[in-house]
Image 1 (cartoon, rainbow, N blue to C red):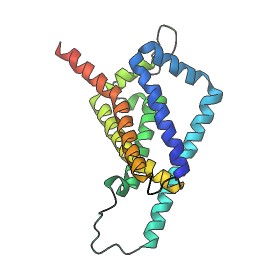
Image 2: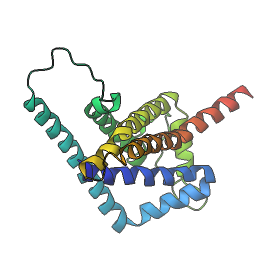
Image 3: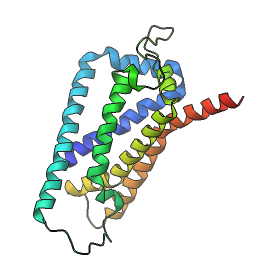
Image 4: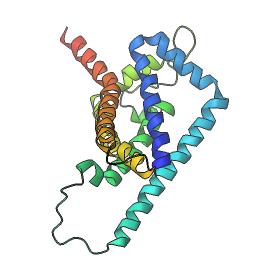
Length: 217
């Protein structure tokens, strides 16, 4: 759980940094996307590795949940979660919702299934002046749909809630957390989750704001 969580956390950070090139303009994000898509010898091993990592992470979560339930089959008569945070108590639920969102997100922007993007346009033929896939235009079209953006923001919120506890728990499981460093690690986990949340929602929020601004003119 900890090892796969660490790998997925690094991916989430890297993915956000790549996505934020949206704000540098179409040239930057389209060039970045073209680089990834044209290096299939790198792209497919990474995709397969991520798929395996996600599967192992989900399997670990379900296995641990079963073990916890088996260790205490009878629930507490009057359970008061004084020390357990909301994030820690909902790790399995938030994780499964995030997994469902990942499937939708891949179908939306990677497989580019027209029927689910709610824009009525096919993203696959979008090309820029250099003949590269116009990712910048695709993101604007995709996030211009309020329901899509709302789903994205809620899912990212759940992901970051998941990480706010998961990063600290990862250090605990790997034996890198003690009573001296624990407060710093816990606060750092929450701060990292907040930064990731703001970074990820910046794009859909900016697209929606721009759309509303255009409509008001």
